[in-house]
Length: 367
Image (cartoon, rainbow, N blue to C red; front, side, top):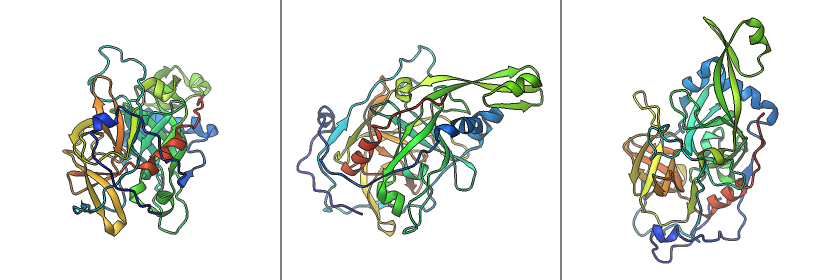
């Protein structure tokens, strides 16, 4: 159900706001807590699916897009601004970068691709980012990158299979590990009604694994190997899995900001989609503005001009500091309007309460 947000009472600079943590309003909102995305008993199968056959499933996966386009238009002047008690959750640094190993130290290590098997039984991907959590194990992405599309009134949406997060993904590699999804949290208005204003999800993940391919000498050793494995024309290959630990410890965690005034500069990161698009992470900057698409009952969206079309779940970061690779998550791409406008739900108090429930979810080891 839509809820009326109180208008803003004055303008506060983003930099000043982010220096002070404001408690969230003491109000419970409806959320959806799913059954496990990848139960402990299925972790090995999920890893074998994505890492077997030379990680073929990762490389052939296609970007998953909203089934219906969004025809966004600017909200007329004079319409009540979204508002509420403003607040932030601080970012947390991860392991230090090893000098000389990063191609671009100004890009966040927290960003990556989420992979899943869709309702069509084919591999797909979106973008996502690590965000601050009690147990350092939380990924933020678009809701449609976790749940199958739901028809209004047809019940609660189901989650996709074999959901994993791969930070730093590029050209089929997982340099920072693979983290299977454990539990997803989303707004009930999205999972029941497909409300695009609530098209976001927070996923608690299992501890990660670092894959490394090794040659297996002979059929006997291949048969005895217990991890992901596959045959090639020249022999046998196994994928050794070593512990990567908790996601946040490895890559760090973005903070989160909500109920900010619309219009402050944001850094938009994402994996571009399209035939000629680069496979790595790209960045742009923009100032969001309010838009809506009343034909889809989406009236609490924000938009930025973007030089590239990025995948769903791509993070928008306020007060981003390239040296640390950290900022405050304040938007997530859910789609585009035309070829140059990226769209996100407005981050309000309801989003914060979904996030607040998710950040207490405990991680487990996949091994």
